[in-house]
Amino acid sequence: MYDYNLTKLRAIACIMVVLLHCAALDFYAFSSKWSAVVFYDSITRVAVPLFFMLSGATLLAKQEPLITFLKKRFIRIIPALVFWTIFYLIYFFSISHHSFLNLTVI
Image (cartoon, rainbow, N blue to C red; front, side, top):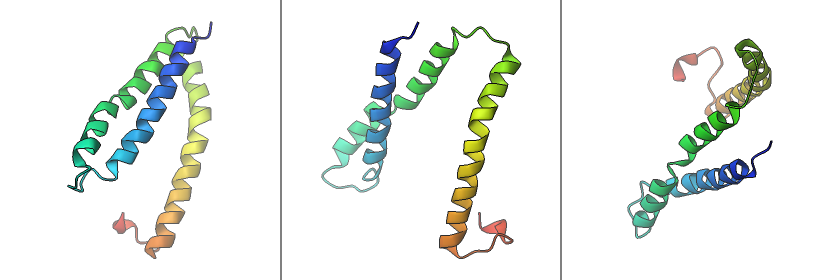
């Protein structure tokens, strides 16, 4: 049975991650906004552990062998990882004007 409370918690965690990243823009700029930024940064730090706990809670009900579980996740995650790695490598080398052969820059 689907638990809508977990979905609501995921939505809250997503908003918290966005707020965390927005607050991080001014985190090192000591201005009049600094105390508010530190406050938002502090209360939204729970977002990533919350995602991990929600993932664990949804996996508790799974009744499948470990190898099947890992194969399904591998098939879903690896293509996206490879695509975005290549995308950002191309982006990095296009804006930094370094060649692929000189990888000591990274």
